[in-house]
Image (cartoon, rainbow, N blue to C red; front, side, top):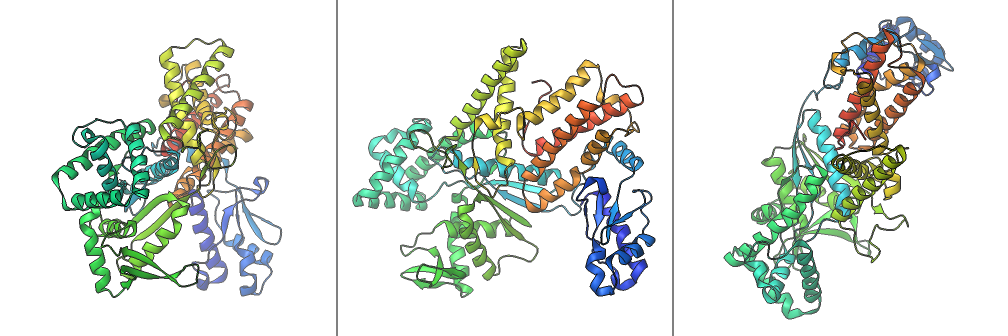
Length: 584
């Protein structure tokens, strides 16, 4: 709820008490944005909900509320419509004052969180010895945007990269490399990441078909867990090599993360099992130690167990996740822990969250949130893959986006007969290409699948990053053309007269409400929708209102609207992890 709505809600609550007595203190006035702008900006629907309780017609209730309602500083006189809707229209003078106020505010009227918290965002999470692929795209981009928004609001955010850097796969890979490429286990950079991935696949094939090799691989895992010097050294080399490759992609995407892999929690796993045993939750089932879950059954309808220690004494993902959860609560002192993973892992999170709650490990003031997302699909509507059927490497996908942006820009410059340096072209292509990929992902409701299309995401029209970057660049074009320094426009300059100015002004003042909603529901597409609408409203204003040619004081007022729009776009896009351009 934005500041204006907050003020109106308080006044409506007071009017309810004055009209109907103290029993109505705290009654929600059901204040929402007006369903139709011609009726005003907000409407209070409380009269309809109170009809039965008061034994009166809703319109009579609305009349009584309006009689006691004082919103004269903010709104025109309230109007009652239909059966009892109270319509409120913001005064132009109020809007002007609000815009003049936020013009001097670097936060553009968005207040910091009233009670900042320690929050953890767990995202990206690739596996060592494997390349990051299209499946890592959404977690990385969505997680980064959520972290940026929470940081902007003043929360103490720990961005964790829970990489897969432990377990059977390392025994398998090390055992195989000992046979075919022992230098990779003793010498840094003996292999590039592509070769390492290829060896991993061959090791997996061998592991699946050769029982003698399976045993050798398991022995390597035992040696790794016991800290054998040569195996540990080999493991560290493999991790470091993967880490360097990951970092290239994180730098390309401007992502900052603290790596804390599965190996970090390895010393804590036995303690998890011991504590579950002490709490009486553990049940032995076919040699494995399990916790049986409420609400989860197998195909036969029998209760489903969550295995925390396998029959061979080994641990699994659930054990590691329980250990990490305890560490994050007890050591990191997090109050909200957000896991950004694909929707297919929903059951896993529901299950280990349930075990942690049953064990009494989750204090009342700690919130656990799984942020699920859908799949990235190809234009055929199936899982996005290469022509050969392989998973698309994330590095290739990003390079291709930049390449498409480069070709589009070259064509546009040719049509416009513009000459630009190769440095300019490369920088614009990089920013536009990466921004297009990020925005195409974030602008979808994250719970849905979406079709990946370079042509759509790079379109200069429609709900795309290039469209908004172009609006931002257009505003800076105005400042260059008029030799305007936006910082020197001065305060108290906004005067709203044209309908498109009013529409733009009202929308600029909704930024705080949008960011607050994303903080709560963790849906970055709400911010995307807002920025797209804002860009459209600015273009309508730009098309219908002269700016540089306008007479004073209108000219300065309209330049302030331009500046506020550009700053709002820049701030909003930065919270999505998107860089802006002053020229395109």
